[in-house]
Amino acid sequence: RPDPSVHLCAGVMSAATTTFCTFPLDTLKVRLQVNTHEPLGVVRTLRRLARLEGLLGLYQGVGAALMANSVSWGAYFYLYEAAKRRKAGASGRQLTD
Image (cartoon, rainbow, N blue to C red):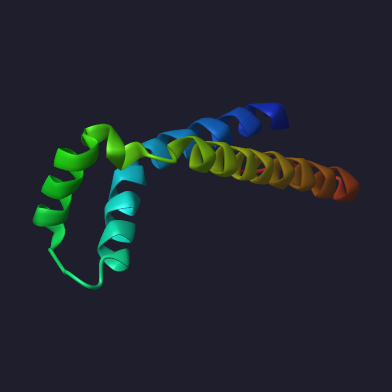
C-alpha cells in the first residue's frame, strides 16, 4: 500500500485540477447572482465579462481558491488514509480499498 503522503499529493493535484477547470463557471455564477439590477443571462454576462476584463477575468481570484482547496483536500486525503492505517493496525486487520 502506498504511503499516506501519496494520497496527500493525489488530493492536492485533484483539487487543483478541479478548481482550475470549474472556477470560470463559479465566477460566472457569482456575476449572475450579483447583477440583480440588470439581469443579462449567461451568454450576455459572459460576453460582457470578456469585453470588459478579457477571458482572464474568468480566473480572477483563482489563486486563493487553488490554495484553499488544494490544502484542504490534500489534508483530507492524507488524514483519511493515515486514520485508516492506524485503525487497521490497531485491530490487526488487512487494509482494503
